[in-house]
Amino acid sequence: MSIDDDRERLLQAPRNDLARARDNPATWTGLAFAAAHDDAGRVFDRNRAARFRVLWALQYDRRDRDLPLLRFLLEQQIAYYRDAVPWGLAPDLTLAGFLLTEHRQVEDVWLHWQAKNISFDTALGYKLFHLLTSGVAATVDAVRASSHSDRDRLLREIDSAPYTDAAVEAWLAQQRLRFPADPGDESLKTWANHAARLGEREVSRRFILSWAEGQPRSESTLNTLQFHLAHLGYLPEAVAVQKEAIAISSSSWAGAEASKLLTLVSLEQQAGDFDGALHALREAERALPGDKNGFYEGIWRHFVKWCFLLVPSAPDEPTARRLFATSHAHLEGIPRLWMDGVLDAAITAAQHLRDADSVRRYEAMQQVARHERDEEIRQAE
Image 1 (cartoon, rainbow, N blue to C red):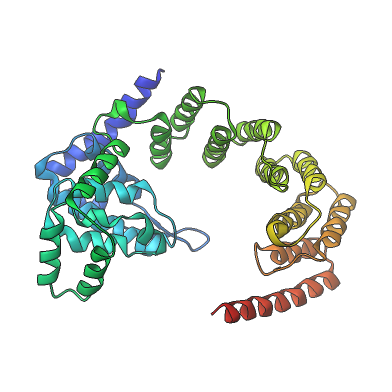
Image 2: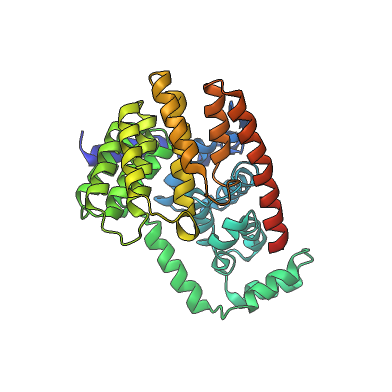
């Protein structure tokens, strides 16, 4: 099947869903945020994929009649982010916001304001321009006339930078490039991301591999490719890409090679290859900078954490105990042990080896580390 065939097939279901939503608003309940919990207790949205399918179809088929639907979809995205996305900002929210801005309705200003104020990340990434597409002066007049509790705060934000209608139009032009109306203008990397959101693993893989074929074989390209393949669960391929990235690495940062090798450790471990993970860990140990403080303390914490994390996967007890001893030896002198889950991994490894003395020692170290964390936060405040 060709890439064009993949694109056409992938869009068929979203187009059908959009047609149903346009014909019958009663079906919108199937697009609403529906909270559920996974085995770890994390909140997820049962309707996220269905809602994204309609949003994606709307990107390529924009009509004036869709204004109520777009408002509903943005409201549901806001509810989803508030309940299930404590950090981060993905195109599902910004696409919903952008499509609504294209209608330039001043009464949508407070809906966009809600989207902007969900979290720290949305405050930074969901731009104030979303609120101004009906015209800066018209927006300011509407906000001033409002009794909204955030009226003065929003007016201050608008006044804090030289927002002009020309700047708003320039931003809209950038967004139209980011979210093109023609499917053929969408990058293959974006197609890969969308396919992944819709649960189309193999199609997503084909898109990202085709995208990579058209890119220089740089560290940036390989990092994107490795991350995407790993996210999809194609771990042997992700391992091969990460090895290639290590081979061509040219970073001048002393911890760069060790960092890439630790990513390889993680991939090998996920792929179930203990020997591969252990080999990469030993290579990372060789590449570690000598200083455990400052710029390098994070890489040292991650290295020691992976030493401990591999203990339960060892094929036999002698190997596990040698790895545990190496982990403990390297732990000495690393600052801020309350970060990165190092001591959690140490306790788990000690429990696996039924080493009660080590469990007690690491639990005591964890209490000390938490006290140090609280003191550091207090001093910062």
